[in-house]
Amino acid sequence: MDDRLYALRRILYLVLMRNSSLVRRDLRVLWHPCTQMKDHEDLPPIPIRSGSGVWVEDFDGHRYIDAISSWWVNLFGHCNARINTAVASQLSSLEHVILAGFTHEPIIELSERLVATAPAGLGHCFYADSGSAAVEIAIKMSLHYWRNRGRPERTRFIGLGNGYHGETLGALSVSDVDLYRRTYEPLMPSHITVPSPDCYFREPGESCPDYSRRMFQHMHRALEQHADEVCAVIVEPLVQCAGGMRMYDPVYLQLLRKACDEHEVLLIADEIAVGFGRTGTMFACEQAGIRPDILCAGKGLTGGYLPLSVCLTTDEIYSAFYAGYAEQRAFLHSHSYTGNALACAAALATLDIFRDDDVLNHNRSLARHMAQAVAPLTGHPHVGEVRQTGMIVAIEMAKDGRGRKPYNWMERRGRTVYRYALEHGAILRPLGDVIYLMPPYVIQPDEIDRLAAIAAEGIDLASEA
Ligand code: PLP
Image (cartoon, rainbow, N blue to C red):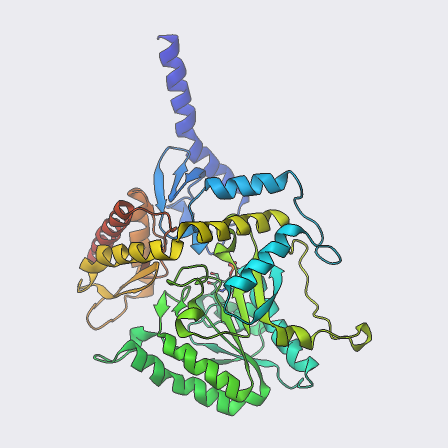
């Protein structure tokens, strides 16, 4: 055989071998998150070699559109040139330094810009390294705030049914997605859960604002009954993402802000999934015209590059901790990597892109395109609802679409769609039987069309099974 042909075949062989050999090595030593590892017997993990824009590529050369932004973190594509440059340049001066007793320029600038970007009045930034850690901080800070204000009996939290705030114990304790919570229940304190304003359950003919308003009665009652023992209400503004991309109307947040003020209870907005333009505005709270007392952000903060999260708080909360050392009021929470300089550089580059590229406006036209692309699925006999808030589109599969009767969860219809999508070059990891598109903001209209077609074909296939 000709030497060159042999070399070419050898290279091809090595390349082709790499997915399977990496999978073998992976399964020997790794334990993946949110995964029943036995599922990998028939659907192995996919080793990714590279990413570019909305695409990632495996070691066998298959390409996939990252339709879910790698768990909702990626905003401006994989290997974004501007964020790459910012991180590389930061790398040459400072990678990390302890944030207690020391500071650095990227974190100062980031804090200034976040304070200027977030709803007015959130004047201080406290950092962590994951969304869950930010929620832990918000919980501890709220409790400590009331203690410092002479109200130590306030120790409970109110959360929404179907809410999700992360999976560390504190965050899980204010969450209500049974799948994640059930087993660990004995480890958690009892907080108060009120029914969600999730508009999927509105009556036929009832509008989403009316339903959200009606469901607020539950929150109203909970606050009337429990305000004296409650530190804060925590909500995911507008979209309960992990709970199935369930959506509700901004009017609920307006009523909530008013009621929290009346009862002197803090309001925590968990914008970890919905912040940074995902719902159409920079922060979802803006659509209700409200300012929470604590705003948690993470995920897209670094454009999906590095773990960084933040709690923005009011000056009033900050001041309640500011005192002479002997008063022992200081907030006590620390993570080793708090305020990592590389992560801050990625976050600053991300904010630069928002500033320079008119991202929110561009997203509005992408969102319109997404709506058109999935519109044919409305009325599908096995689709209960197609819903959208900004750059999130969700398609809820149902046994009886019109009656919204769900499939038996054990049938795992969503997984059939997931598998179909992978075979056709898209990552459409569902939430149960909810298929959703939550792509990076650099997606092109033709890529949206392609995703919508794959989702529709996958849903047809899954409903036949
Ligand atoms: N809060 C919300 C609303 C989330 O959607 C998530 C994660 O999906 C979290 C908190 C937890 O964030 P992390 O996974 O970074 O800990």
